[in-house]
Length: 164
Image (cartoon, rainbow, N blue to C red; front, side, top):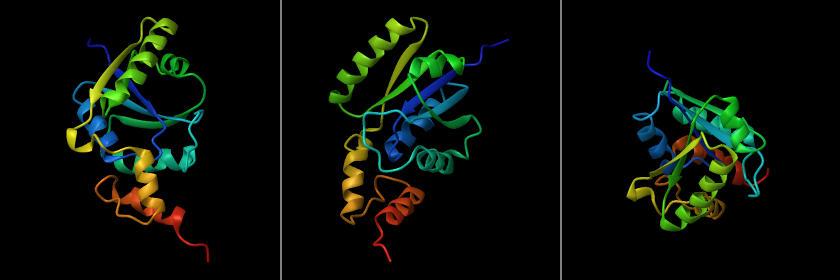
C-alpha cells in the first residue's frame, strides 16, 4: 500500500492571490492531500480575519477534493505534526522571498528533522504579485482582477465600501 503524501501550505493569505492558486494547483500533481493552513498568529497586520481568509480560500479551492483549508494557531511545526504531514510547501515569487524562506526552512529542520520543506516557484506571470500591493490597489479603488479571483474582489469592495 502506498503512503499517503500530505503537504501543508502555510501562510497568511491576506488575501489569497492568483499566485497562491497557481502553487496550489501545481502542487496537487505532487501530493495526495494539500492542507492550506491559514496562520492566525502572525507578526503581520492582516486586513481580513482568519475566518474570512479561510472562507475565501475554500471558495476558490472547493473544486479540488484533495484540498483542505484550516486556520491554525501556534508554531507551524506542531501543526504539521498534528496533521501527520511530513512536507511543508512554500511558494516563492522572487529571490528576496528565498532568503527568508530558506532561513525558516533551516529553523524548522532544527525543530523537526523529519519534516521537509519543498519550495515551488509561482508562474512568472504572478511573480510581481504581493498581498501588500493588492491591498493598496484595493484601498485606492484600483482594478484587482489580474491579481485575485472575483470572490476576493467582492470581499475587498465590501471592506473598502464607504459607510452608509
